[in-house]
Image (cartoon, rainbow over all chains, first blue to last red; front, top):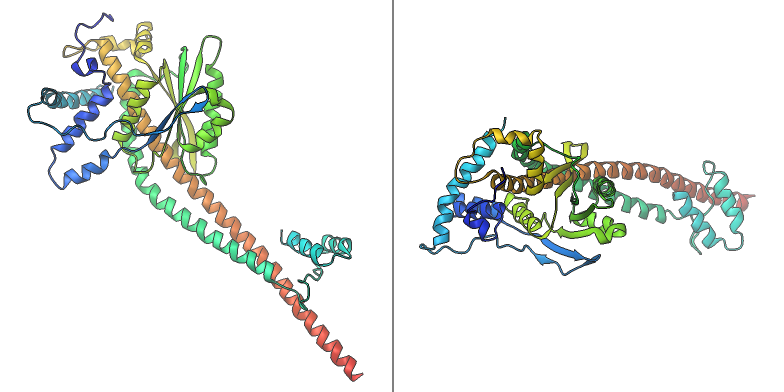
Length: 103
Length: 324
């Protein structure tokens, strides 16, 4: 039943979690919007928090939100980008499937 | 406490006879106040009471303003909270909720607020987290904390410093959005080892009622084990999987997404509860300030009338002494 998978998706192999992957896809989709919706959507993208790891009861130096909120600026022929774009639609379909599975 | 102020003044001025003044003050508050005056003054001073009344009135204004600010913010956040509930409900319908799952590594994610003056919601969250910690620690099990918000950190530092894994603050600098919580959830998933995540927050039932709630999210491996043992998760086998993915992969994606959705909803519900608690705290505070103001006004009037009466007595006795 839980056989070892032959091929994990490319993003899992690159070390991303599903959340990280869907975040990037969402940012890409938001980038495709036209004004004025684009600026409205930009306010939904702001990421700010300060996280500090603890070790042995001591707090280490806090760091600002660790992951960039914007994806790297796209270059038209980047392979990863084009696959992300194609998979963005698959992801949205996945989310829809998740909600449709509601019994 | 106006009495205490007057008693203190009495002790300061009448150095030669402190006890009679104190005894008089304690004995008959209703009949007549002991004569309190700064050295050299000839009439009773109402300055102390007046100062106190001014500061209490200012406090009342401030707390009223804070209540209105919280009420206006609450309206907006409440809508988003109710909308976000639809994110995790399908997950619970599909995968069920297993609060009594017995695992080795528990991580308790406690969501608290950064700012204070919000009543007791942070204390209840911390209490629930501590109880959970006790429940889930044992000979082979251990549990750690991930704390969102300053108030929780301050309270848990006192006795559980060793169990804290990570603390997060400044969450509410911009309005909470899903991207921010997703980045945070990603961070937690990457840096914290867990078998089960327990998210503790205050669920917003209504403006005056906030219930501490706990949601359990299992790691993909534990979820696999649960699915093999049957129950709701075991029914997943009856679904057909499209695409080239396996069930374990889908479970992994689902648990990560579930964590992010639950954390988003928890953060929003806690923010709502914080605003509602602040509203009621500031409301009771302004009501108390109003009561205090009434009592002070009575004291002030009594003192004022006593000083007028004293002046009149002096004048009349002086005049009668001249006449007669």
